[in-house]
Image (cartoon, rainbow, N blue to C red):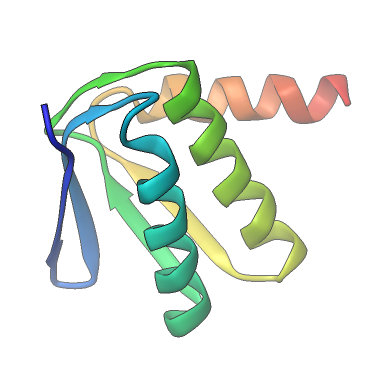
Length: 93
């Protein structure tokens, strides 16, 4: 399934699977948005699946936002799991 990114009032809805086939494009597109606007909110409510490649892309976006002092948010069902994963990775490092 293809991944679509739709903007709605400054929040970018991610629809479809975030996986090995879509993660790189997702990451590059979001990096461009983060750089252009200084902050980025993604809504994963309509994301059907996130695999390890998708999580790696989200973690890379989080790290990029932190190092460039920009704001990056993930909202929607499952966002707590993502934040917990990022937090456990950050603490372990």
